[in-house]
Image (cartoon, rainbow, N blue to C red; front, side, top):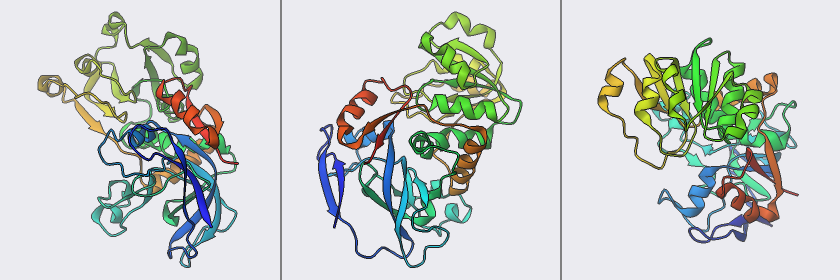
Length: 335
């Protein structure tokens, strides 16, 4: 038997059909998952195009996966055949380094990426370490929950770790990550300001949980926000006026970067020394954080707003993401 997929055979190419053998026997801790849905993340575009100079080909993208367990390895505990699970960016870790022992598996130097050196979720099935396959609460719909496995935890983890209830937070970029960040930030009890260059997103931003909407292109609106925020979460992928946003932070405030900005972060040292401000990055989340995020999303009715394409229209779906026309996430459905 083979697992049917769609793969990039070289950088920047259209995806074409690809298959690989389905293993007769799984590793002791592995699960074979029959995929129903897989979100498209901007990281998939970076991998397809080899923007990070790490992509092996043929490359099967996809790391926002929802499906059902079809088979389990001999030592798998806690998951059973037919159970609905999700898999995100990470499909495994070493389990014994200092970071794994601290339950911060997302920082493991020997982690296994779901779609990098491993066949991902633009496919009928995927193989993953069972410890990185997470039960999906019944309250979450598969097509809307898939983006939570990467995009959701990417914004939830730093909000949960670095921001305190009642604090003021700005969220820059109201797209695939930002619309989830607004929902989580509101449910976590923060005062939330949305920054976007798209004026037509104001109504939606407020529906997602923003208390205030500010244009990210009209600098005249920014001065009234100087020394206002405890944290600013950057979900955008574009060059920003970093000194201006640093001026908006209160003393001891942080800019938290989760969007993979393609331009250098040009930050004058004086802008962070004054007020003891900081700039920090955050990467996905630990296993514990992903479980917590899924349960929190189910309790607070947090879902991605999605547009669904069948898997065989993967190139049309990717084109929409490349053109930044997704509002707000594109998800592939596997029949």
